[in-house]
Picture (cartoon, rainbow, N blue to C red):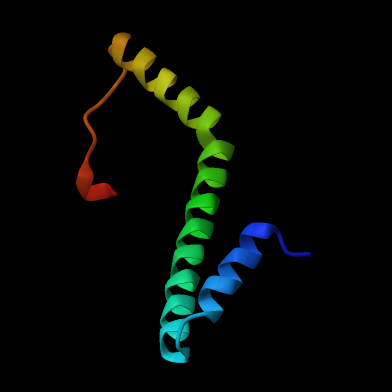
Amino acid sequence: MSSPAIQDLVTLVESLPDTVQSQVIEHLREYIADLQDEQQWDTAFNRTQSALVAAARQAKQQRAAGQATPMDYNQL
């Protein structure tokens, strides 16, 4: 089932020459892929946000208690 916005888009694209239609479709594919990627990132971030907050609090507490040690970036 198509929404009115989709129907408007189809009408606009259909009014263009075939070569331009192909370019528009390719741009839309890239744009939609970017949107889907952003959505996946947001979902992953929201799923782990509480764990990140807890880890940050723990690190802050350890630092305040003098239990923190400098990070060795060579071990990463």
